[in-house]
Amino acid sequence: MSGYLLPWDQAPIAITVAVFCLTYLGVAIGAIPGLALDRTGFALLGAIAMVTLGAIGLPDALHSIDAPTLLLLFALMILSAQFRLGGFYTWTVLRLSALINRPRVFLAWVMGITALFSAFLVNDVVCLAFTPILAVLLLRTGMNPLPFLIGMAIASNIGSAATIIGNPQNMLIGQVGGLDFGHFLRWCAPPVLLSLVAAYGLILLLFRNKWTGAPAQIDTSTASPDFNRYQSAKGGIALLLLVLFFFTPIPRELTALTLAGIILCSRKMRTRELLGYIDWHLITLFCGLFIVIAALERTGLPLATAQSLQNHGWSITQPGLLTLFSAALSNLVSNVPAVMLYVRFLDPHQPIQWYTLALASTFAGNLITLGSIANLITIEQARQYGIRISFWDHARVGIPVTLVSLGITLLWVWWGPGG
Image 1 (cartoon, rainbow, N blue to C red):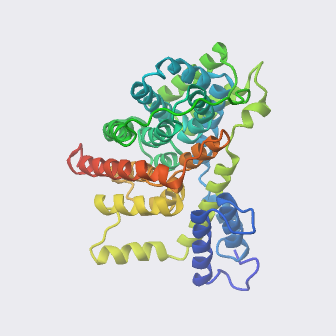
Image 2: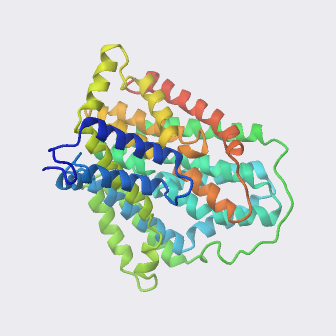
Image 3: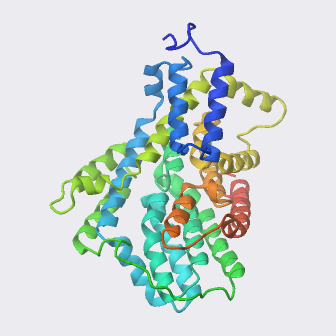
């Protein structure tokens, strides 16, 4: 198909590369002074530019969007919305409040529960639901919110690496790589558990004798809906069925969509309410980046670059370099855009490459605040309750946690099953 604005069949390579670089730069910095553009806006503008400049035709652009991944993400957001509107997240945190006077035990439970939920309910959504409830509890009881909220965000990232459905980048890896749910879980769970324990130990070390603060009076009316036993049980049954069906040959997105459709058939929860918890910005970000990367692929430059590195002894699919490059890229542009670019180079017949990318890109999200959307959600939600988590507050925990977890990943790749 010919270009829309240019007289040639395809935009010159230089223009395509320039649009790609500007898009990823915008996604990395997240804002331009004087404009209200965010990361999703940059991705969408990049996709529009690629199509209108003729770097990719509209039919090819639409075809480049991985619909199964987006449908799976959408369906899981519906499931998580069911838990949130049913007050299940509120009930969970309040049940843990009996341990608040034993901060080390309370932190262990918060991190453990967050990691578990994030493995099956998408870490971004879990942080969105847990942060307000946890923030209110910590402020009212006079606890220092930093170790618990940072610990929650870090645990959500680590825990989400355990399964194909734990986070958006894993969903993409699982769908594109055609990975088996059970094999993925069995291979990734051990380094996830080790990393979670290491993260807990590091937080205890860094925040020793810094557990308490001054109690605060705050408005708790908007923290979260009240607990509804029936609606929460409905969500729990749907989640159990979802996981069970993931061990069958039925396409994951079809199973998830079917269960999401059943959840929408509710006498109490309006469709508008459930859809209100869908992260449409994240879905749009995916769509835009799919198109931008597909346009870059058409130039042949990514493959040529990878081949050139290979010829010089730098194979980007070798475990050490894969871990290093994906971790670095994840902190430059966040882990979702990094994975969308990196999966183009992996061998579909080498599942350990895909497992390694899933672990490395997800663990790397803990390094700094920009590495993971879950970090940004936690920080923004906490700010609404007067809790300031600075870049350094997070980094002083995130940096050592990330280095240790990436080290565990490499040891597992080299000496674990199949290493």
